Image 1 (tube, rainbow, N blue to C red):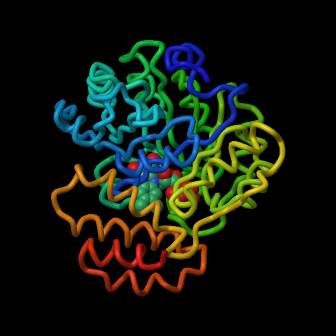
Image 2: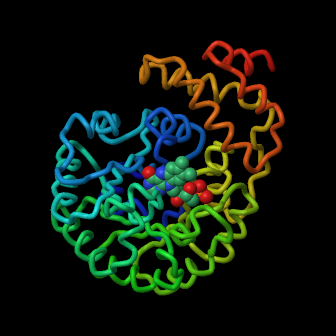
Length: 336
Ligand SMILES: Cc1cc2nc3c(=O)[nH]c(=O)nc-3n(C[C@H](O)[C@H](O)[C@H](O)COP(=O)(O)O)c2cc1C
């Protein structure tokens, strides 16, 4: 396996190292969840939930609270790198925030130009920037110049605000800024999370781009991945909701990317008994993070709800009624 310093020299992503990236998901893929998912699948790296940067660069304590891995060399407990995602519209303040992150130990900066949340967009952040390629260029250039060359600067784009073909000029803008790679969620801002996802657009970008393109959007299971791989011809994929629904999905995808054949075991957890070890582990990983046990119950409901979007898990209605962490843990333990 490549050492972290080797990877820093060669880049986290390169064509000889295909693989899967864990998506940033605000309120979902926090440090305990990043730790849990990276224990179950070999991610190239995780990207943190976005850290919003408005008028001032966040102070150190905010970085540490948001990204506790900064205190452990930006690695999860099993040595998976964690890259810092920033969101904002002010090039100078973002550049300062990136410098602070790097001083605290960040190994790479990812810029969020895809968030569709109306409150974020109203305050000049996320997908709003997709309307202004020149601003994408200015922000990405400022951040690129502010951090040392060995620190990657990547961006996460949607296809456009309302026109999917805007992806081409926006990609040109961030390429001109010297971006290390580009992740594309293959939908417009106006689509939100509605179908269809357009992997075809990713293919057209990837065919011409001189940097790696990470394909993202609607890879819920192994057969979605095969179709996305076939259509985009990418070597790098980011998964979010699919990773929550099946913590082994990235393992299965990585096996295919490395060997060219599907793994013999395509297990995906469905019953409470299947989920029990994952839930117990999440409880153990998160215990030190929150003094409020009801927080745990809320997170488990959120997680299983996401997993049940694409799988029949009729027992979810029982979980909905659990009030305490003991009730929640018992639901899974009693299924053993
Ligand atoms: C609850 C939620 C939170 C998200 N938070 C972020 C975020 O902080 N930064 C970001 O770039 N994308 C965020 N996303 C988008 C995901 O990273 C990803 O692009 C999207 O879910 C599509 O991928 P998927 O189909 O594999 O989930 C979020 C998505 C969801 C559903």
